[in-house]
Length: 511
Image (tube, rainbow, N blue to C red; front, side, top):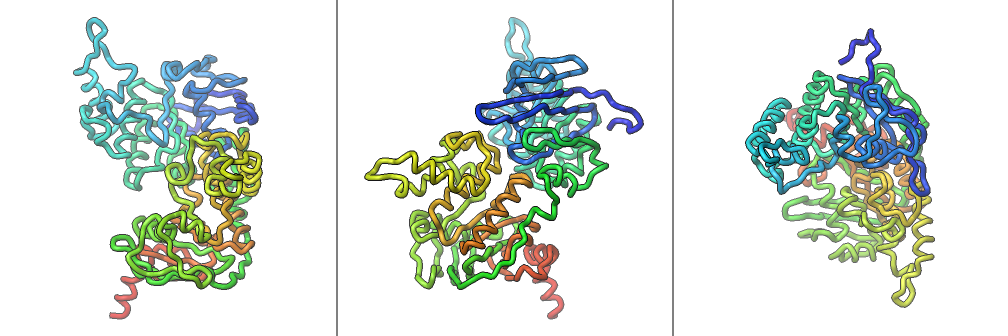
């Protein structure tokens, strides 16, 4: 880390970088400085321009205006190879590696050592790979096929690849998204090593605990502009949130004065041979019912069963007093129950299709006539729901895969709302999206409840559970352990009951 009494010279500076795509200005005259031996956190909402900046740094996109300065020398990063030669490399949320190649081949792909006559020097490549892996504390055999490694080990291989090209600037884009807490701690240790070696690190994360744990500096983007930069030690989490979204942390959750109505959904003794048992609860009109529990508690499995993805071994569900027979998701949709899954990329949207077709896909009967789809009606239907969710896209015919994570989630929610359901199940509705997009989803959830829609929200985020739920059901090991009204519910109660501490304490006091 740099001495606080001196002003370090940045390894890389961006001055006035602007990038425009058809219909949208992704970056507008942004500045950024990265310093040796320091982590700079890049903070911003989905759609703020972070991904575009990373692509410019790695030579994928070219800026329309502005300068990239490496070691005080203006530099053109014409392609990915030019970025590598300039000492810039990136480690993405999803590692860009090849399962069919060995660890060593992945590390040296494109710049493998060569011997006589230009032939690959396999022995040297494996030895060099072994040395780099040892240097970062990774006990990985360089001869192993990459497919044999777990996610955390693949991240280590990606970092080893970055070091193999002697990178001076390392971009880490949501590197902890798929890691366990133990693996995250290992990554922190590795980042400390990279800092000690003088690497300049750009760290992109939605998790403020990570930012305050490892970063020395911060830069905030909002709507494609750089709105603030400084030292992490000079700001609080609330201040960063306000800089990101333009409003205070206290305004993230909407103020709700809910008065739920009559019971709409009744679930009695729902059970599955391996996932959950004896599940009973009611859901009332205009209510947001939160489900909280640790990973493996069975929450998502219950919701998938209600949606017809799996079949319960026994139990029944009733909607407006009428027994339901749901064998498939199509049955659930026809009955007015829809499910927004946690994995929007694989289960929620078809990312290669445009926004308007994703939104209208389950509602084609409303946008077609005698088997012919009416595109104008498709656009009208998609526009109605995407505008309500404040979707940010250049046009409705933009492919979903080109949207930010938060906007992809809005497309998935819009798709199911277009079916006009009575019950909407939201499974981790704000997972992996930024604070501003979370606030938009929360506002819309509150609107839906106020209009009389019944909402079930599965969430692992305690602030979200406490901030949005009218009632909370806590689950552990496939069973409901408690139900609470929101008033008087605390994070301590939720954690204790979800982890089983409450049950242990009760047994001890009874004894």
